[in-house]
Length: 439
Ligand code: NAP
Image (cartoon, rainbow, N blue to C red; front, top):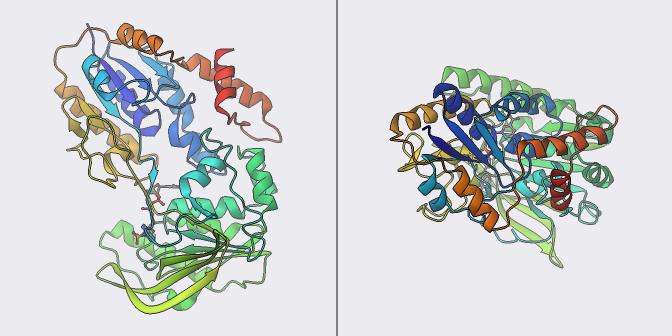
């Protein structure tokens, strides 16, 4: 008898854990469960469409998915189709690789006006996530008056959003940006994008490569007020020091740019904390920011304000995890409370579910390997093979599982529909995904 592990979530954290478990313990089996009928998690529906090089890691995960010990079970949702208790009872261990899918709130007045978007809804939309693909943000009427978009946050998600909104259709031809998004972004009368950090350049969490790309946009020029840039930045870690110096150097370059040199401007604003979003007839009109200075790493209000004319505000300020039946988590937790990946007896977490929304895709590899090692050490005698019992439960509940072979049918259609050097033309509708999977 061998062990069978349920991994919930087929993004990088889940796949890296699966690969290590299977490789390390001969005979061990993995059921890789995902609520989407498509695998690869954020690699497919989170990484920006113009970062195909990053997305290419799917090829590594595909090899794992084709291992005979692994069973992909798409369109099966934890909490809807199977409970955590049912998985814990039947599998030898459960690994939560379900990320941190809920956007954090700003907690300021006006946050729910028409024109305020979360990073998840916007990036889910332009990445063809079937939950968001039909919820087209209004980028035309909201921007008709001011042409101003505020993106709040100084992380790589904010940078992704700025870049995708600023790019022209010809800069996106070799990507998998869905046509509906490409057309709507091209039609949006964007004149000014503001990327807003509540602290300074030394505290920003975007990385140099991503920041540099903002200086290479065809029709948008990046500008920054040179007086916001310090002489030098001191980081505790020497590796961070190098990154911070690079960031400063790139920003210095942007401070020399002529804001009138291209059709639109990206204003990189520091020391500006969101205070209030003002609206008219329920729609965003202005964003009021409180100017700050940084003291002991914290943003402190200087008493000054700055008001921007904007029609769209995008919140790219981080995420928290979803509550799960059977697990107690503090409100707003950014990860499932765990000790080195162990959440409870027989329940483990990897990826963002373990450490919160941080790190790049490669960060998940070592992290998942370490958790998989600990999990293997704690395995007892194998339970009875759970697969027949789980299949029976799903059949009873009329759940049509999308297998990896079914997914390959979707992948094939997406490849056939791709034009002009695009890697794929994503199927973005739940019914169509299921129809193709079942064909
Ligand atoms: P992040 O790096 O933690 O950035 C979140 C940003 O939101 C920070 O600048 C934070 O400011 C700000 N923020 C939080 N609460 C705020 C508030 N109430 N008001 C104003 N600002 C607020 O997270 P992320 O951008 O969501 O990215 C998540 C992870 O994915 C990161 O590790 C990132 O590197 C990774 N990622 C990587 C790529 C890539 O490699 N290309 C692309 C996308 C994402 P404070 O610092 O002041 O709290």
